[in-house]
Amino acid sequence: MIPMMIPLAAVNFHSLLFSLFAALACGFAVAVVLSDNVVRMAFYLVLSLGATAGLFFLAGAEFIGAMQLMIYVGGTLVLLVFGVMLTAQSPFVSMKTAAGDRVLAGIVAASLLALLLQAACSVEAWQRPASGRVAAPSATPIGTALVGVRVDDPPPGAAAGAVRSGYLLPFEIVSIHLLVVLVGAAYLARAKRRRTPRAIDEAASVDPVDAARLESAARSRANLASSVNASGRSGSASALAAGGGR
Amino acid sequence: MIGMATTTGLFASGLISAPVSVTHYLVVGAILFTAGIVCMAIKRNALGVLMGIELVLNGANVNFVAFSSPYLQGQGATSLGLDGQVIALFVILLAAAEAAVALAITLNFYNNHATVDVDRADDLKG
Image (cartoon, rainbow over all chains, first blue to last red):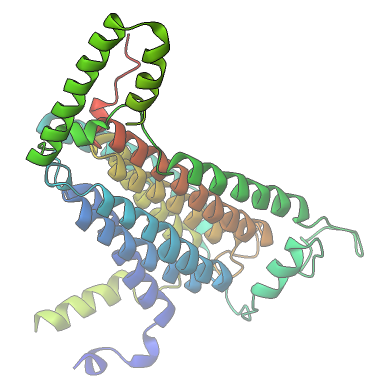
């Protein structure tokens, strides 16, 4: 029925796919904001970022699109989903935002969006798409530029044969940065031996076996204090060492 | 009948026939950015705030890729060229690093305070 109404050749499939991916990306981004359930927010975010990768492919940046899928959707969001799973206790899965905050956020969002859209549509040169460009793969120029060799086209007006710097230094800085950050994250999130009981354990209900053990420990500590008072200093040192083992 | 009307409406408005330009991408980037800002501002769950940050970075990435693309701009406009794509790549990598550290901080906060509500993180309040 559709080919009857519109000849298939008149459909610009680039524009059609762009509309599809743009609607998916924007729709699921808005769904992230409107949803209160953190698990659903994570899922909507996966879909929004995946649709954005499709937009990157359509813009001719296939390497960036692949990296978006592999690092962002495959790595960062899996990390976020793990965070959601580790903290998904019933009061935190669905945290409602106050109605007044929602109204205020709506006003701020509308004004910010109006400002950005006005800026996006104000430049006439951005509204004229190129025509008749031949697609060229972008992975090889990026790969060589990251090790300092530029093989992409120089900008118009550049001197022929001029040496252009690559991205070796930013690449090294980012790699060291990633190493430091991952070591730091592992240090921050490591399982610690705590002197004081964790707040989350205190919040949980104390089971009877634990309570009995805590009580007996407290009683032995009281006995220890009385024995320290009664006997001399020499006997108390070994008793303290035995009591400090817990 | 409704489907036909919708299709012709889309066709008339140029969404499936007009070529895509940088402005289209900037509009998508603006919507993603605004959604991220609002998400950062109104979510009470710390992980929701993190998701807002991801959306903001992604909106910026859309703009970088659009300006670096040779297919979206006319002859008169200057394209960012390879720079835009490499900046987008670095943004993706730094977003991964940021998410790792922020998640570690969130888990530490959860272990110490038994909550992920950002409104409860007021230990430093005077």
